[in-house]
Image (cartoon, rainbow, N blue to C red; front, side):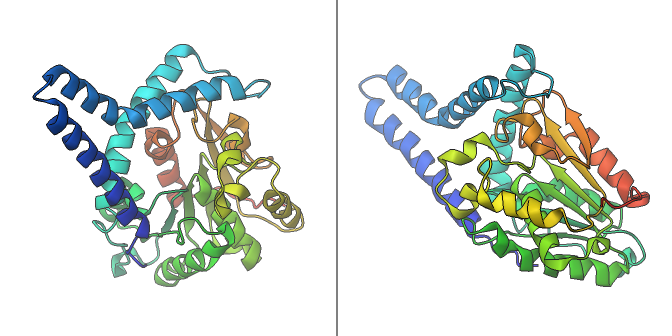
Amino acid sequence: MELTSRLAWLLRAVCAAQALAIAGWIAWRWTASPVQALAGAALIAAIAPCMLAIEFLLLFWVRKGDPTPRATIGELLRAWAGETADLAQVFYGRLPFGSRTIPDHLDPSCVGRTGVVLIHGFVANRGLWNPWMQQMRQQRRACVAVNLEPVFGSIDDYAPIIEAAVRQVAQLTGRPPVLVCHSMGGLAARAWLRTTHGPRRIAHLVTIGSPHRGTWLGRFSSTPNGRQMRQQSAWLADLERVEAGLPLPPCTCWYSNCDNIVMPPSTATLPAARNRLLRGVAHVAMAFDPRVVEETFGLLESPLPGARK
C-alpha cells in the first residue's frame, strides 16, 4: 500500500508554524518580560487543548435527548485530559512523522490466518494505527493500513484504495479480512461495500467512533467529505437506501458518551450492528482503548457468525 501521505506534510507544516510562533514570541518578549514571554508561549501551545475543551462543552449541549447515557463531569474531564495527551502523541507525532514507520505486514507466515485492513478517519493517515500494526506483526497477522487520499475529497473516492487493500490481504491469507475503521473510515468502508455488493469478502466490519448517521460538527465543514458527514446529508441518505437492499457483513460499532467529534453519541451506531458503548472515552482515544483492541483481536480467532440482512 502507498505509504506517502500528503497529510503528513501538511501536519509537519502546522507543527513547524506553531514552533516558530512560540520561538518568535519568546524572542520578542524575553528582554522586556520573561513572564510575558513564557505566558504567551504557553497560550500558543494551549490552542489545541482549548479547542478540545470547546468540543466537550458542545457535546454536553448537543447530546440533549440522545438515548446514550449522559456523561458525568468527571468522565468529560478525564476524557479531555486523555484526548489532550493523545493529541500530542498522534497529531504531533505519529501522523506527521510516523506514517511510514511501520510498513504493511504481508509475510508468508500469515497464510491461512485472518488478516486485517486498517482504515483511518478524517484528517488522519495510516500512522494512527502504528500500535495496532506492531501487535499484528507480533501475532503474525497480515495487515494493510491505507492512506485515504485526497485528504479532503469525496468519501466515494476512497473505495478503490480499500478494494486494493482487501485484495492484498485476502490473496495472501486465503481468507476474507476484518476491516477495522476509525471515524470517517467506517463510512469509507460502507461506501466500498456499496460498490462491491460482496459482504462475504470481509469477515467482520469494526467501526470505532464512526459518524454512521452524521455528526453535528459536520455543519461547520466545507470540504466534500465533511459535508457528506453532516447529519441528514443526501450522501448518507443514499448510502442507507442502497444498504437496505443489500446483505451486509457482521458489524460491531464502538461508540462513546464522551466522543468529542461524533455527536450526538448514538449517531455512531447502526440499527442491526453489535453496538458497544465505551463510557468516558474521547474520539481518538477510542481507537486505542484496551476493550476495543482485545475484542477486535478476538474476532480474528472466531469472527461473529451471521450477516445482516
